[in-house]
Image (cartoon, rainbow, N blue to C red; front, side):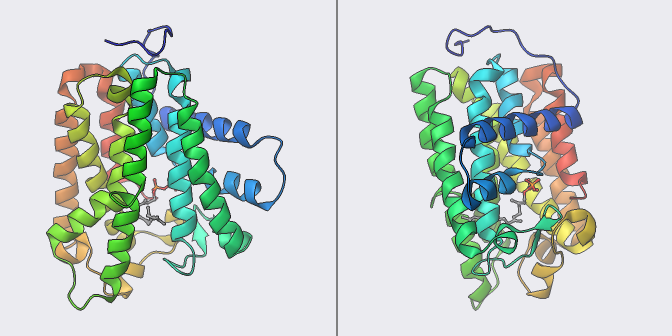
Length: 301
Ligand code: GRG
């Protein structure tokens, strides 16, 4: 297996999911905080605010799949921070009145409510640029790093998250509701692309076989979105940390409207099974990733 730029190749110990998520959040926030240190004013402050308080699922996937491939955690911290920057930017922009128009995120006022719309746009823009700066600074060999930069640009851009978001917005005013296949394709971009990218950081950095984690990431991304649709119907806003019931009220086609509540839950459960089965080549080392897949459909926020 390729090394991570001459770093020690001992596998860090496996942590239980709760600890691994908290650790991933600390790694990402510390790296971003360091990059912004010395800067004053609303925009850097809003950038840090937008990043704080999430589950850090994507940073966790980066760190955990890197751990599976014996990549030094220091080499991968920049990638973990980068994906949380892109994710935080997408949420800050999605919450704005021109998109989903939300006042609450992670139980706190959204960025444009705490500051204003211009600050939310600029904080999102700043986070997107910072993501690529942090990834480019990662202490790993150039070839896998370039691959990570290009694939992150793809996942975040018009072929991935931005394209999925655009299709989602177009669907709101379309004459016909979307079919199940169209929703699956849309969500693979909007939500799935960042999750799939995160799960592939380990094998990409190690230049190792990508198939098991491709299957895992794709199944996890779809299960995550189905769980989000289920939460929109069954969740409690004070626990979810944002408004619920909006999709249903808007008559939007979702996995729940197309498959029914039980159908959507069953589909998510079989995707989690598929995700866990794909990890068999990694044996017991992949237990925390399996735990994460089960958490994604059991979560309440
Ligand atoms: C604005 C270009 C642009 C894209 C926005 C991701 C997205 C695209 C919009 C968010 C809409 C949404 C709530 C989608 C459901 C899936 C999702 C991304 C939920 C939030 O992710 P979590 O649960 O969030 O990982 P935390 O708060 O834990 O980080």
